Structure formats: structure tokens, C-alpha cells
Image (tube, rainbow over all chains, first blue to last red; front, side, top):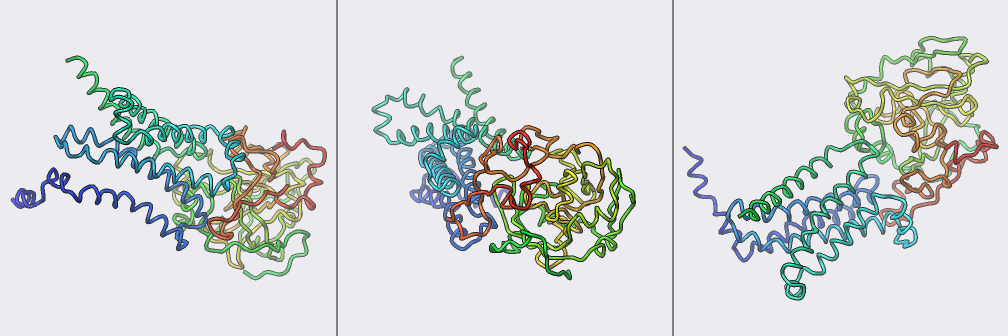
Length: 213
Length: 268
């Protein structure tokens, strides 16, 4: 009968989420992959092809944070923990942060910031086009993430705009799928597609139930 | 691995040799997984002794050749070749071996033999990647007879002065320096002389992307990416600019005449 006792001594998660240091702590944790990559790059720890390693790692972290931010609301509702809402904007901007790093790594290391080469590449490779489109849409969301933007756009318009994040999730999966298609290696792609699919399905289910009421 | 000097034209690149660490940990060998770190991690299971190579088809002296005999068949020499992967990266690797032509002359191909087919090991017990259906196993590659007879086409047993590491295609592999890396089959078990162009693994998987010839050519793009430039592995760190890819990977003077009059954008 040790488990229940242990559980009682664990700090209450809901209380922790309301702690003033909770947000800074999540922020620091979320920046850890970035710090780690900078460290690894500086000390030549990225293997034989460091440029490729950085492009891939920043892409992976973009996708992971996208899953995390889209899980916030389902977790908030399912666990009855309204304090989780506080983390949503910050996590959303962190997705954008890693996406920008991903784009910069590709543009810098792969294309030497040559704008004509990048433009040609976007036209030549559908998977680059899809990734770029996802970046453009996410930029619109990042630029309207502050409180005044909600007032200017009006709550409903703002919400509609920000629901396009699911469109971005779809583009991200297509981007990743095409990238892996050359090697027929889809295990990871399927994993992220399933996670994002469940999160989207939960919202649709909730929306349909609400509209019936 | 004991070896002497080469007298083959173009066989000693003066460029900076890629670190052994990179050349032995970053490569494609799908039989051990599709990630470029997989072969170095997983290839220790490969059993390279005893090893025989079957010579068959349109040839006067077919048969099973033991690795020990192949090692002694001709004098081994070091060749420093550029290696250009179809994915857009490159290395400079010192190989040890002898021209494949030495072996071909010894087994005496018949007049009808126009192509050489190379079959590589596909052993699901020691090669975890063979269970994945990425390619149609075993991995098959092929060359036209004149390409196979070219002195630059190397039957390699070693690299960096040592016996080949397992992840690089031990105990013997092909190295065709003017073609994309995948044309150079690893861990060879069969060499077949035929009158028909062999059905090669990547060509079967995606004919519009990987042609039979697959000569390095900056002017003919892969359908999904440009082949105009390449990243030299280990060169000047992260911010090094990609370098321009050279026609026939810089071996145009030696091999250009093999393709005289051919439309290389059709015969890619």
C-alpha cells in the first residue's frame, strides 16, 4: 500500500501550473534543444554532415513542439486544469522559433542564402514548396499572436485564422512524408501523423457535440 | 593490407582525404538500415570469412572463387578517388585493390558478353535491413563491358591502408569513381557476364530517378533535386560553401570517350 501514500506526497500538478515560475521553467526547458544544438555545432559533435544534422534536428523539433502546443487544449479540458491555457501562446511561438531555425539552416547551409537558388529549389521540389507554405501560414499566426491583434481582428476572425494551424500540421506531415519517400522510411512520419490526427479528431468530435447542443 | 603504387591515369586525387572517422560512420548500406549512421552501428554482424564469389554467365572460366585467391589474383595498389553520392555529398577516399579488368581477363568472358552484373549479399540473418522492403533484394548493380574493363574501375578490398570495414562493404566491393556511389556494389557475392543490360536495384525501384548509367553529371538533375553542387564531408566546418560538381566526377579525361555520341540526359 505504498503507492497511494507516494501519490499524496507528490506536489499537485494543477498547483504547479499556477506557480509564477512555471512559465519561465517551461520556456527554459523548451529552449534546451536549441542550446544543445548550438553546443554540439560549436564543439563539432554533429557527426560527418553537421549541416544536414542541423536541418533535420530543427525540423524534428518543430514537429514535436507543434504536437505539444496542439495537445494543450485537449489536456486542459480532459484534466480540468484551466491554468494550462497560460502556456499556449508561448509554446506556439516556440514552434515558430524552431521553424524559423529550420528555414534558416536550410537557406544558409544548403543554399548559402542564395535567393535565386532558393526560389529555384522551391519550384523544383514540391516538398520544399509545402514546407515554405507552412512557414508562410505560421508567420501570419506568429504576427497576430499578441493581445492587440485579437482586438483588432475581432475574437471570431482571430480564432478562425489561428485554426489554420491544423492546415499547417497537415502541410508539415506532407513535407516530412515527401522528404522520407526517397528511402521508403515512414515509421516516424506515421507516428507524428497519428498524434496530430488524434488531436484534430478530438477537436472535431468536440465541435460536433457542441453544435448539437 | 599490403599495396603498391598505381600507374593508372587519374587514380590518385591530390585533394584532402576525408577523415576515416567520417568515411566509416556516414554511408549508405541499406542492408543495415536506411540511415547513414546505421551501417557503422549494425554491420558488426556481417560474417566476412569464409567468403566466395561466384563467377557465372557468358564466361570461359566460371566457378566459385575464394576470397583468399581473389586477394592474390593481382597486386594490390592504393587509389585515391573522389566519391560522389547521388544525394549530393562527397568524400575523398583512399581505396586498396586492383582494377576489375584483372579479374575479368582471368575468367575470359565470351564474345557475347556485353554487360557485367554484380550481385551483393542479402542475408536476413546478419543484415537487419533486408527485412525492410525498401529495395528488391539482393542488391544488383551493373556495368557495360567497356566500363567494367576501364582501369579506373576498382575491385577494392581495403581503404585507408586497412582491410575494408564491414560497413563499407567488406570483404570486397566495387568502386566506380565517375558514377554515383550506389553503382559501386558492396560485399559482392556474384559476378555475372550477360548479353542483356542488367536490371539494377535502384532502376527497378524508381526508373525515372535512377538510370542504368548514373554517371555523375552536374547538368542532369535528379528529378527531385539539383546535381549541380555537392557538400564535401568534413570540409571547413559548418559554413563551408558547397562545391561545384564536376562532369563524370572530374574523370572526364579518362572516361569521357566511353560515352561519345550518347545523349546523357536520356541515358542518365
